[in-house]
Image 1 (cartoon, helix red, strand yellow):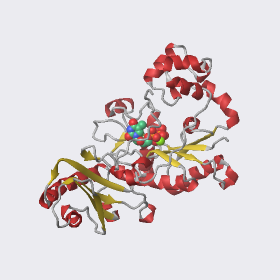
Image 2 (spheres, rainbow, N blue to C red; image 1 turned 45 degrees about the horizontal axis):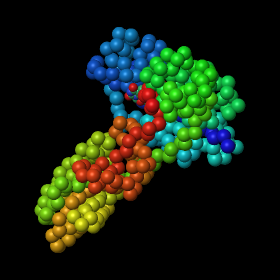
Image 3 (cartoon, rainbow, N blue to C red; image 1 turned 180 degrees about the horizontal axis):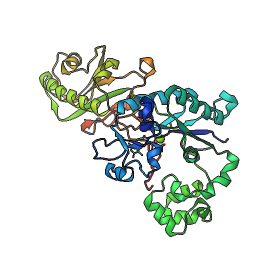
Image 4 (cartoon, rainbow, N blue to C red; image 1 turned 60 degrees about the vertical axis):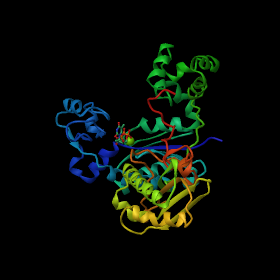
Amino acid sequence: MSRKIIHCDADCFYAAVEIRDNPALAGRPIAVGGATGRGVVATCSYEARAFGVRSAMPVSEALRLCPHLELLPTDMPRYQAVSREFMAILRETSPILEPLSLDEAYLDVTGIDHFQGSATRMAEHIRTRVRDELGITVSAGVAPNKFLAKIASDWHKPDGLCVITPEEVADFVPRLPVTTLHGVGPRTAEKLHGLGIKTCGDLRQWSELALRERFGRYGARLYGLARGEDDRPVQVTRPRKSISVENTYSQDLATLAECRRALEGLVSDLERRMRRKGLDSADAGQFEKLFVKLRFSDFETHTREMVWRRPEHPGAADFTPLLDTLYGDVPRPVRLLGLGVRLPEVRRGGRQLTLFDAGGRPVPPSSQGQQRYRGDEQGGQGQGDEGTPSPDEAAGEDV
Ligand code: TTP
Ligand code: MG
């Protein structure tokens, strides 16, 4: 059965939030990032784009192209807050939601029967809600798969909707440049161009075997993409449930005093980690629990947790009683110590915590739950709940 995928991408996201919060900026060329005159543009308004200003462009060049460009400093907490509200609206449309960045996500609405199952009307509803409730615009693409939905959302940007029905795929795809294909970066593009393949139409002239011979396994993928085929599922990402650190010690810790000293080091690591993930002290009141994990040299492992209701980040003194209880009265060598904070899935007031890491990348589901402690026998610092960004959308990268 044909699927119904929606790809949503907010228009000039950081700039749109700035304009929303300061309407005097509307209609003017503005750029966010590099406000000191050094560094690069994170994004810019469409008025600035008319001058050729682009994301990742050095500010000096942007100012050369557009001397009256207004530069604003980035304000990540504000963009993250808007992003959380944006994702909440999307999640109300379908629980099968895959965020790709702060302002971009796939939704699988195949089984959703709102609007008589019309994905087009669902996409319009999302766009209207985001405009009315968040004060920014979103472009959306509706298509039978991720590859086409993403291309479609870009098709009528900004503030546009583009629908590619299953019947339209055969006409739509041949004119796409191969550079729009998932996984085609500069190197693959050069190789394809070298073979005289510029568009999907050109690519269709090649047999799967011939493409496999030249591109290996990716040749088969190219063969399918050139026909508008892409069966990658929308991968649901859930909010992170904890932040933790742990260490397997090269030499067992022999006494409780040694464990306590080691715990202090871990608390500093945890603090650094939370900062990296953008959790400032204002977030501390949202932690649900603290926990300590201890593994003795015979691999017996115990975890102990306690409720945390204080409005500050926990320190070593807060974790120590948990360690002491776990350690007990009989001295035994300890090979691993870990500690961390557990987070609620959804904040009060609907604010979602840590759906993204500090870099704005979504936290994948593989980083959840029991896998928190995976790899803890490898030695070194456990990075239990750390996730890798989605392998999807390797834009600009050769596969
Ligand atoms: P994009 O969705 O790529 O760009 P955009 O939303 O600004 O513009 P568009 O209308 O084309 O979608 O990225 C989302 C945000 O991510 C963007 O507002 C700023 C940030 N970003 C960077 O910081 N650096 C970059 O190089 C890019 C591309 C984006
Ligand atoms: Mg965007």
